[in-house]
Image 1 (cartoon, rainbow, N blue to C red):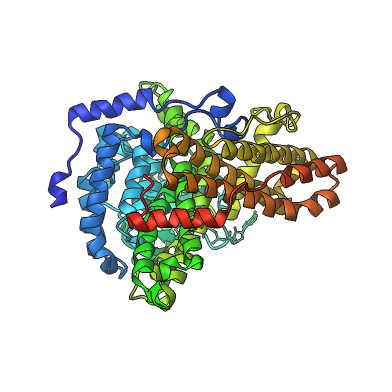
Image 2: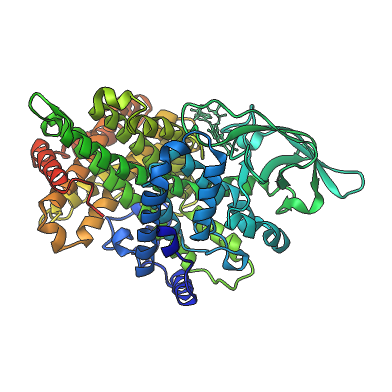
Length: 615
Ligand SMILES: Cc1cc2nc3c(=O)[nH]c(=O)nc-3n(C[C@H](O)[C@H](O)[C@H](O)COP(=O)(O)OP(=O)(O)OC[C@H]3O[C@@H](n4cnc5c(N)ncnc54)[C@H](O)[C@@H]3O)c2cc1C
């Protein structure tokens, strides 16, 4: 069986892993481009990180985890949707033996401390099991459950708890949200006071929607010391004063545990404060930021799993004397699934490649290494939010269209798409709602422009300069994307100049800007990835259609947003001349090919292979 084949890395493999941490994937071109959000500052660089650049070791891990997911977890998928704690924990421990629950934990505490690329690919591969609820339990364990300790724990705290979490002997949870403090999490009301003898913290308050809450052995609970200093505390199951609420009755992820926690003079040993008093805000926000790219990676695996199922179903199901796969209305849906999945894949691995390159520049021996890693990850907050939004919204569309292709069977729990659709709905809500994540995108650009960390002002002046010649393989695609990029930069600049700090409140404009940024990042990552394949892609009709449809999707988004924003810009006091130039630039975005032909080609290719094959 697979489990016996799986192993922790040998010391040689661990050495390779360490070397990768110091060398990392090739950094993107210039300094501005390699900064968080810098991808808008120049045409797509000649090299971006993508799955085709995985190291040998990463490929091996990918293969091993996929096999485990499909052969061991996949057959238990339905049982795992029934809130079966024992089975859920058994599988957690089994993936613990493979090193996956300790993937971000330092080796000295029983983990593997792999790079972020490996972390992402492991999550993606596990999701190929189709076990949505179990994935939420796993992700909480390895993400918000364990990472606060990894990055903010003292040596003693790490020694006491991390080995148990890395092996999944213990389950972990993270309790930040309260009834009155959701998106505005830092406004929470739970309190902590030092006991009279100075030996314990006494916590009071109520936490809601705690993933893994009913099963956890260790909780990271956020409360304000003396009602003021937001702080995080490590709380063991069974602590005096901690009571668990009933399991929530949820729309999806029914196999996972979600409960409220009641803190009634909850006693926490003094040494279980995480970080210093007042560090809670930084802990809460940084940990959420890290989790975001992994959520996108999990959605990516589910997109691939769903696309394969829907393709098989469409080829099998006969109506009007032919498989439904060959009706154009079905082709259109499947082509979109492939196109969006490829773009998501490219965006996720470009993001983790940037993060790994940032971390690789740090000195592992630096006593402040963990904090610097956090800062390196925060640098890519824009890309992390893009991954989260793009992943959750792509999977939502894929599963919705998947249900449509399955027809009545899509609506039946006897078939797999209903569960994917229900399970993914939460992805747009937790780890920061997608509204909050869009605010992160336009908020960070606002900050970086005002602090002059990104040269938006210099760039916008050049927005009407001639574009490079559109010739050769992907020539048109690159030129069209560059036009979209310049438009986005100009619009960002004008919006920032016009609204200033108030952009945070001009949310219709802000969200449209974020959508432009997301569309450009995804499409440019995908096109550059195809370009890197060189002749292999140039001579492959499937790749050519894929590239064209990816850019067509991006331009469609630019048109949609331009159409809606135009009157807003005019009414909002933007210069008439800018709006006229903007109109002319948008009008120049047109397709020099017939998208229906490309949809037919791409789906013929999909049906020929019988599965998503672009990896
Ligand atoms: C199944 C499940 C599991 C969860 N797991 C955990 C967990 O393990 N730990 C934990 O701490 N929390 C957890 N949560 C809580 C989750 O993170 C919150 O539900 C989420 O942050 C949103 O908060 P809220 O529900 O209070 O919604 P609200 O904050 O009330 O938001 C409602 C709506 O208003 C929008 N909105 C709010 N503020 C703004 C703004 N400034 N601008 C624009 N729009 C805004 C939101 O985007 C949303 O659309 C979980 C929730 C669920 C449902």
